Image 1 (cartoon, rainbow, N blue to C red):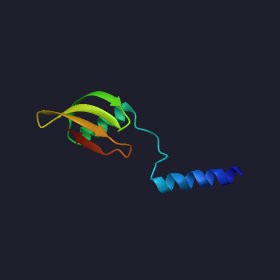
Image 2: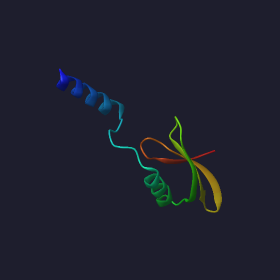
Image 3: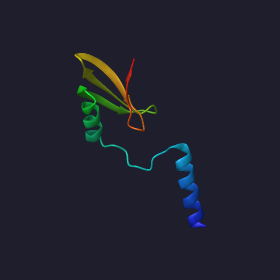
Length: 76
């Protein structure tokens, strides 16, 4: 019975694309944002949309959202 439950959970995770990997720490998140060309990362908050932050790119302040897959997107 327990093996069946584990297999069902694994199948659900695989079908939904949810990763069982651990979440990024704040330091890892900042490092990933900086590696993407942003500086002065601040105001990091977790939301339903993902992790949001402020940063500077090309001398301009931008708002970012990092989704559960680690993709960084600028937000208006």
